[in-house]
Each structure stands twice: as C-alpha cells, then as structure tokens.
Image (tube, rainbow, N blue to C red):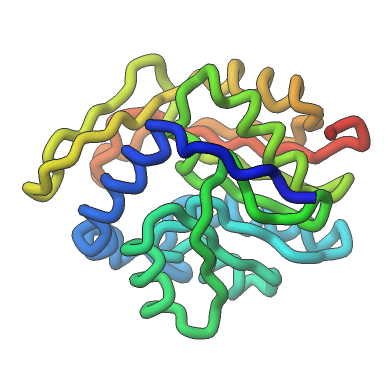
Length: 225
C-alpha cells in the first residue's frame, strides 16, 4: 500500500516554491555535469553495481531535479525513473531526457507501492528536510524498497546550514542543511538499514564547494517496515 496523503508540510511547500523559481538557472549552472563528467559519478557507478548484482529491478531517483543523475543511472543500465516536487524542474528533465520517465511527487509521502523498488537515491534531496523529520523520511524510503534493496544518500557534511537568499535574483529563500555523516548513518541504521559504505571527501573549492561531501549506502533489512 502507499502512504496516505496529508496536508503538505511547510518545508515541502517552501522547497517546491524555491526550485520552481530557480529551475532554469540551476539547470544552466550545472549544464556541464552530465554523462562521464558528472560529479562523483564513481559513487553512482558503485551503487548501480550493487543494484545490478542484487538482481536488478526498478530504481527511483528521489528529488531528481533536472534529471542529470537519472540519466546517468539509465546509461549504466538501470531501470530508473525520476521524481521531484518541482514542476519546473520536471519540465527541464523531460525536455533534456525525452526517453526517461519523470513523475511529480513528495519524498515524505511517496506514491509508490510498498516493497517495489530495488534501489532509491536521495542525491542532495534530503538536505531540505528538518532533522526531526529525517526518521520518518528514512522510514518512507524503507517502505518503498524491497528487502535487500539499496539506498544511496548524498549530502553536504557539516553542522551549519547554508542559506540561499534571492539566488539568481529570484525572490525566494531556502536552507541547505549540512549533516554529520555519523549522525546520518545512525538514523539509517535506526530505520532498519545495514550500512554498506560511508564516503566523505573534502570540498572541491574549484567547483565552488564550501563543505565536505558525504555519501552513505545502506541496504534494507527484512526488519524495515
């Protein structure tokens, strides 16, 4: 069964409004990052290998934005679809990747049946979820994954959020939360995931990064509900 829809949380509305406003500028800023040039593509390649060796199946790119990661995973042979809050982001994803499937939806309440995914990726998309909502978010990820399915999280490492106010001149504002990898790993394990890998790399200042980048891969155990 899928989760029952409820009134949209304020942080979800704020996130949608932000990305609807900046979508075209955001996509242009990262236009060079695709295919072999995708940043941290080796992490994604390793994840794709785990899913494939586990027998394959459908994979969801949750918070897919303009679809760069979705397209990369598809190029690696995965049966993948993208999901995002922002209609503007999805319009770009469909325009740039006409052969792929993209759906509109909200990560806290996924319109995906229980236990149907072989893999799920949250590539810098959990960073707008308040810390007290992360346990329920990870439980939702676990709900849609089949036993033995894989989850990959990417996020900026640190303690203080980065706030973007009026990016590209648009009248919007959003916090980008930075998390401690050990704390995120603990939340995943509490949600019933067995941690398979933890990678943290230093910030690449040449690419404009201001914090270390973290990547966690977990495997759903039979105990996840």
